[in-house]
Every structure is written in C-alpha cells, then in structure tokens.
View 1 (cartoon, rainbow, N blue to C red):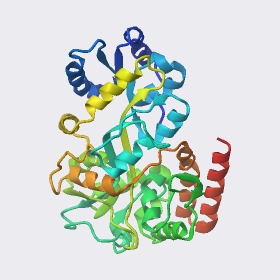
View 2 (view 1 turned 30 degrees about the horizontal axis):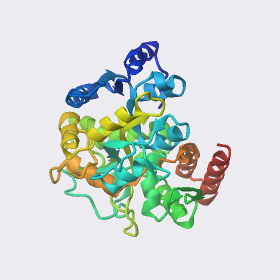
View 3 (view 1 turned 90 degrees about the horizontal axis):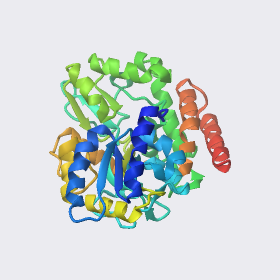
Length: 377
C-alpha cells in the first residue's frame, strides 16, 4: 500500500540536496538497513573523490515522493521488482549498466526490464506451505490430496492464488507479453474450479473465508488454535504462529494435483539508481561494489532476510532454506507496468468465484477488464 508521505519524511529526504550538489551519493533505505549500508559505505568511500552517505526513510514514502522530487531525493534506493517497468518508463530509475551474476534465475529475471538490468537483488520472499509439525511430519506431494477441513489459503487474493493458476497450467502473461493473458484459458478455469470447490466444500472456515476482508484473520486464527494442519502464508506470519505455541514447519507449496509445479508469486526487492541523480556513475559503482558474495552473506547475517544470491548457504530444513527454495522455483511478479492492472480485476473475480459465481464467466470478465485497462495506459 502506498503511504501518504509525511512532512517529516519529506524533510529528511530533501536533506540529501546539499550532498548531491557536491556530487556525493545519498542512499535512502529503511531504518533497519542503515547500519548495513553505513558500514559498506565507509569501506567504499576510502580513496574516492565523492562520498556515500546513508539516510533512513520508508521505501514506499520515497517512491511516493519520487515523481515530484526526482533528483532532490536519494541517488540510490530500494524498490520492489514489480515497480521496475513503471519507474523505468518514467525515467525515474536508470539501468545499472552491468550484468547481475551469481543470483537465482528468478531474481535475475525480476531485476530486468526490456533487456536491461535495473536492480541489484537484495531480498526475496514468497508464500509457503506452513504446517503444524505435531500434526503432520512433512508437506504432502499435492494440495488436492489434503481434505479441505485440514488446511486453508486466502484464495480470494491473487498474490496467494497466482501459484494455483500456474499449478493447473495457467499463466499471467506468456513470456511477459501483456497481449497474451492466460488467466481465462481452460487451464486457468480449472484453477478457478479447484478454488471454488474448496469454498463449496461446506467446511466452516472455507465458508467464512468467502469474505476477503476477514479471510486472512480466520485462516490464522484456525491454524494458531490447532484446528488446521496447514495453511498457505508468508514467512512474515511465522513469529505470530510460534508465539501461539505451534510447532511450525515450512516448505515450498506442493503442486495442486501433480500436473504442474506450484509456482508461487515471488517478490524481489533490491537497490536501484535514481534516473535523475547527478552522479549516476558513482551510484552504479557503489551498487556494483555491493554485488559480491561476501556482501550478500553479510546482508543475510545482518538482516536475516533471504538473499537470492547463490553464494549464501541456508541450513537444510530451516525456514530460510524453504523460502530460498520456494523463491528459486517460483514465478517472479512481472516487472512490466501492465502487471499492475492485474490485481484489481483478479481480486474482484476471485471473490466472485469464492461466492459461487460461474468461473468461466468471471475469469472472462476479469481478463476483459485487464485488457481494457492495459489499452488505456
């Protein structure tokens, strides 16, 4: 969600003006990341005729201010990969001008747009199969084999449901071509019917979860009360689940029926260069300085966020290994700006499917809306 930028944040961001006038480099990152970047900036600054400075700011506040502030904001900042195409088309971010090597294919693909690299991947995340290890020992081979009474997923939300479409042979954009939408193909309809079957099962939590506004809370409540063996959720939910006393395990989400892998939508965030920076070459030099196995391992050690770098080793059976494996086989959220037009129509359509409306008609209407919205861009 884009937050309204506060006057305090605006002032903090605009403090970078003086530094940029001297062609120094300002990095704008979340407060929790400041120590990591400050330490590396101090190393990088040695022997340079310009300096890298670090300031704390919200990623979404910075992005909200970027179209108006442009060069009067940080030279380097963090972005989620699904914003790359939109920002690149507005010339608000610039290519890194070097090839990103040593990262998962998913993260590498997520960092590119129109054949150019715009981002150095730092963190990656996705949804997982979370299960109560006191009730089941490991993830099943397929979701279809689990009785609806034993698990839950927020399938009224396309972030959670995108992988279900892929697991049944559907797709979002074929080869990132927004003219080829695969959300109402026969395979996509099969996915819609699979989801609808859960909501029609008569199981109480699926019936309650037809209401998208309460679906997430119901899913979490039932799981933390020990009424469910498994849910589909993200690693952000682990802390609350563990506080509830659940012995939680994590694994990549199983295929629906074994016909196709469950390619959960995967998000990657990373560092990019301001398209209006007065020192783009210096900014690129710093980002290239970051792109080493040592700094990727340091990022994981310092932040405990999963890096998509192939150089980081995650303990077998750990939550972070499950996240890394899931993101490595997942579906990167498309970086093209047209992807932003998918969320709304699919949210409406998935709610209608949950409420029992005709799946084909609902998905046809959703795709029609997406196509019209893309044409109007």
